[in-house]
Length: 92
Image 1 (tube, rainbow, N blue to C red):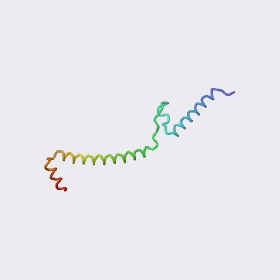
Image 2: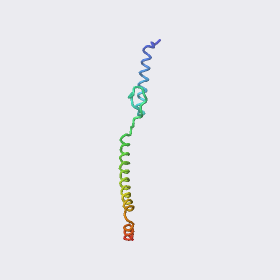
Image 3: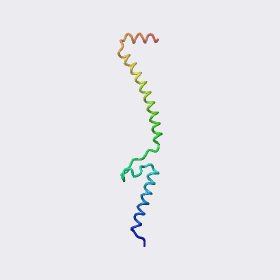
Image 4: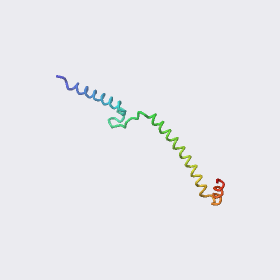
C-alpha cells in the first residue's frame, strides 16, 4: 500500500501545475495575487493601443472642426444684423 504522506504532496503539485497551465493558456496572471483571482491579461494590448490612437486622432479632428463652426456661429450671433445682411447679399 502506498504511503499517503508522499502521495498527497505529489497530487497537490500536479494540481498546481495544471492550474497554472490552464490560467496561462487563457491569459490570466499566474499567482500574481497569491490565490486571489486576477483580471484577464490583455493579449492584444498593442492592437488596442493602435485602435485607441486612431480613435483619438479622429475625435481630435472632429473637435477642431466643431470649434471652428462654433466660432463662426459666435461671430454671427454677436455681429450687428446689418453686417450679416450685407454679407448675405454679397454671397448672392
